[in-house]
Image (cartoon, one colour):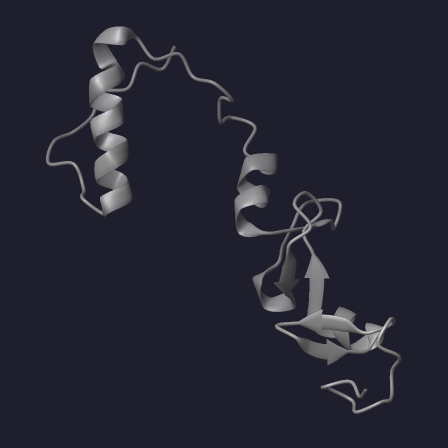
Length: 105
């Protein structure tokens, strides 16, 4: 088997595959890397790096580096339906028609 990039002969047990296409280890790491959290394979152009130089996918980068983001924010029962409605609309791509008041506490 040959590396898709450099055409070097490689053993099947040493090949790295991207979409069933074989790469040698050198060519793989020239173009790809793994997310430090979820181990998904990322193209170098799509990688986000933290201050330590660790590679992250977009989702893990934001969840790992946003220290101001609460892990489990308190939602009062009176606001629960509004939050669910906003979340459903956001998933559908619908923007709110009014301003939202946020309790900073």
